Length: 60
Image (cartoon, rainbow, N blue to C red):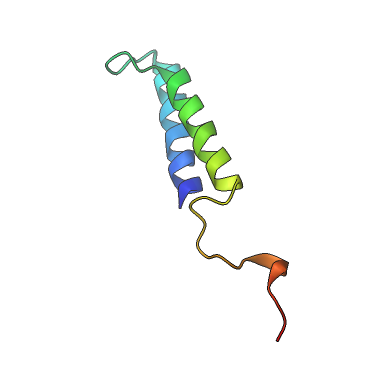
């Protein structure tokens, strides 16, 4: 879910940068940095779907 939000924010940053738009002082660089922060949170495990993912599940 967080990676989808990050992709949308990257798209907004790209559009703002291409169109030279600034929204209340927030430009394209702000949205790129916000997207990178969201991707870092996703990679660290915050916002993932479940607690046990991948090959780390215990066998019974």
